[in-house]
Length: 536
Image (cartoon, rainbow, N blue to C red; front, side):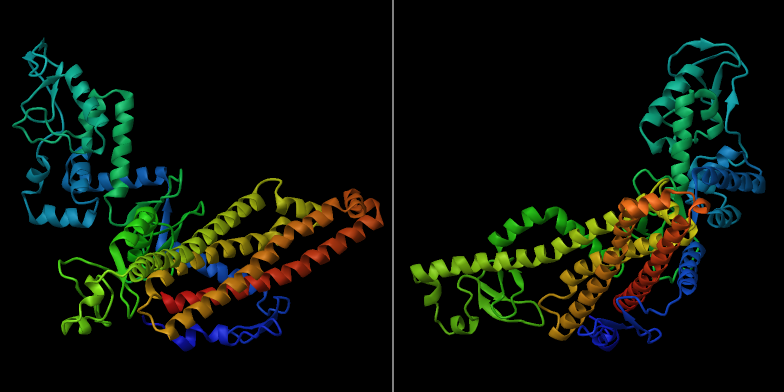
């Protein structure tokens, strides 16, 4: 594991618990519980703006209306460029994952593109019968103009077409690849024919599937996986970006690569393994107890996957031992098998207990990391809920503003603090998944100590920030529910000197509190950026 010990522990080493000071590596300023933190609020706001600008430069938010407009524009561009109907352009674009560049390259270089998609580039998406014909599905005869085809010679009546499209739409997104009902015909059914023969509900569902295809089959656009969120995100950054965390305009954070929640500083592979383990752990714990033993030397869990009792641990340990008695195989090699075949009641009981202890030790280690992973997830959700309550109409910000006369815009430091808390909780949550997989038996004591030191200090700084942020509720209670202050603050400012003085005193309290909270926010931001930078 590549960890720069000196850099990662630099913040931890310079932390002096006796005096409760924190020395930040960024500018060397000193903070005593955040009160003397020298990061001015304006600088903090600029820093936050810089971060959000960076995200906006890499990802673009798209609503459903914007997606429809962009899809229609891409379709019209291809239709105009190659002089083909819009329905044909849609089929071709979908075949090439909605990439204009790929489609243009293929159409200019390969004449067989149309045939592969069921589209005749010189054809039409729909034909109307010009003479009486018999429908090949219901076998009823219809006069001229009553039957239609998908541009081929196979004509069907309106009712049969409507039912055919209805069944296809009910089957899901595969309706976008619909072909002529004739089994021997591969002509594609284009949007122009769908719009004529389908009912309103089926037309709407077909349009929804088409829009979903525009997002889900594209290489650069993805839906936000947040519950009930209809925003799509388009990646417009460079392919070499290491940072895959995305935040939509509704605050949902997810990983662009794997679609799971944002999980800095761990990889998508680690997240996948961790989530699978969480889902299966109830069965896994029983399986570990029944089917594995720990190597007597390095304590790694070993599964017996061959017939003989001669076990060899994985590199770099390579210890050889007996599966039955866990004794060294060196002794067995020279004929001493008595510990395996001789019944010994005490020894047998000890071996059984040892196996259970080994299994429980593995399970206990998992539970240690899992419980903390869950706890920080719940704490993060509480911070997110607090943000919603703060920003709601009549929420904490509005009440503080009304009680102190401070504009709501000057109280946004509270919201920023909770946003920082939510971000840090998420990072800290995933450091436990990182620790479970990267700080096991194979990790050196030095690497483990470095990580645990940084992780512990991160928790300490985050708890100080979270405690300070929650003081806002006590501050609000003191202003609203202290009888003398509440009555005084309720009087019109211009009619009573005491009211004006009390509001001024309340504003002073808010300003002092603001300086402390902004200080803690800056400390946490700097520390967690350092932590992520070393592990990511």
